[in-house]
Length: 369
View: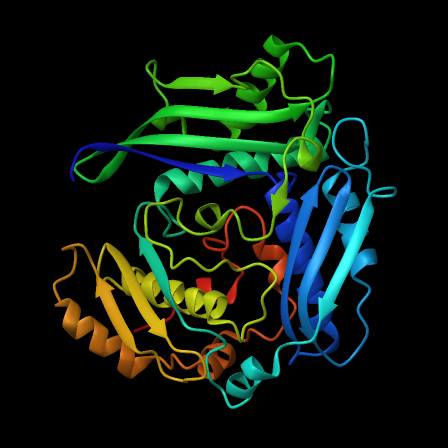
């Protein structure tokens, strides 16, 4: 395609699915802070006023999952039982066991923690080498949280979504066709005031002026009301926002989620490594856009296959690039963990507004190739 429209969405940290991701990653970081070799696979479910935390943890140390969950719920801003959830009074159920010895048998010797396919992607559309639509959607969601936390728009609540439609011309982002923001708010907020505040304090602060024109359509809370939010308005579950976490649908995703998993799970670590490789291929001029796929078998160290797609934007053949990737990068689980330093408690900072495009993360660093 040369001329087309493409849409991506993002959500705020108060979205019920993201609340669950945040709790799961906070538990992961707490485990890694005590034991860098901790094995963690934790999922969180939120419904009404109840949080359920379940999964497997094998570690040296102690884990107070309930305390971590309440602190995270409070940090996000859920303190009102009437409109969302109250961190102090909500019910928390914990059901955590140890990792299956059948899985550990393969992982302990450096093999992959599961079978599966993973993808990494990068393009030159933005300074962070991310597709334009998801980059703009994340900026809007992050700004929504900022103006709530700093009091610029004091009447909005934690739950929210954004969506951006970009018009492409000759495969380049030309303009923004549509901006959609849905944000939870307090009971007696005037919708005209909300729309005005979001336009002035959110949209105009983060969206480049040259990408908005007289034909850009802007929608705010299309139903006209969004008071009940968080788990009181909708259930939440770890790993249900994988397209928000990755590339906004612009590139493929293998299916496995990231949050709540330590780096021995290639669902997470290999996806990070492939992003690193794809970004560096683009940043070093090998291609304008690049998608990489690998496949793993449980217990085996080396990937079963490597596929590189540059969408016709590279002077090198994709077979050459696949060979280059295989020879230059250690794609064993142990090699990925070592090269990206993935045993540190860094995962809470990945949970919201995408796991990719944040310059401080190890898989976002640019090297010479």
